[in-house]
Image (cartoon, rainbow, N blue to C red):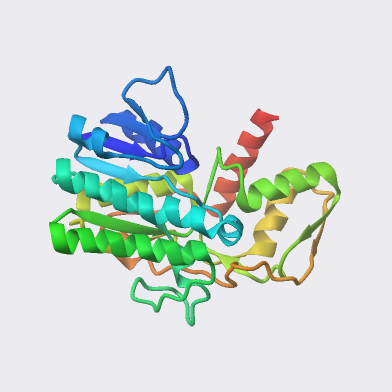
Length: 297
């Protein structure tokens, strides 16, 4: 199988590269200059063009891991977020439509499309109510995927990934906890600590993508990707610091950060139907992340 990974230098993209390269022919695409890797395409960060890529090579699968992935940045720079998360998805699919229509397209979407859900667990059919430009743009990207399937027969699927984490992720909760402990033994965090997330370790995410490639029909489906487990932020923070530096004093300020949802738990019935099972518990995943942090010191 010939796979193109767009955004191959990012967190999910880089892990996809190592995972799939073990058994498939993998090509890369990103905005970063790379003079060493073979089968690598570089695109313009501000005006990406994918026509030459799909015209010169024929791929079986395209995994789009590119785009912006920051809620706060989407609030500060909504136009940039729109370009990276919506316009570029359209450009990629249009290039596939013109030159490589047999290529199946995986769009990495986000649970941010749900906003604050009215009930848990969240099914794919749940009403969409994003509370950030990022979430809104992810919905628009999903709609672009559906449009290209319905109108042009391009086979797509959108994966609503919940809270993915693991070695290599240099942002979000666990990375922030690590850096805050290095500057102050008194750590302040947004919220009350009662907020919840449905975490998925990167290796479980890769397994989910693999199952989807092998089992999904790619008829513009929408799939929740997580473990279907709800964890309180205060509990995972406590566990994290217990295993890396127990003497940290954690204070939840009670302040809400704009764009952050309160409670998440995914219904993963559809994902399980493709054969996915969880292999990494939250405790095992956090311990692996801590080991990686110690290695990069």
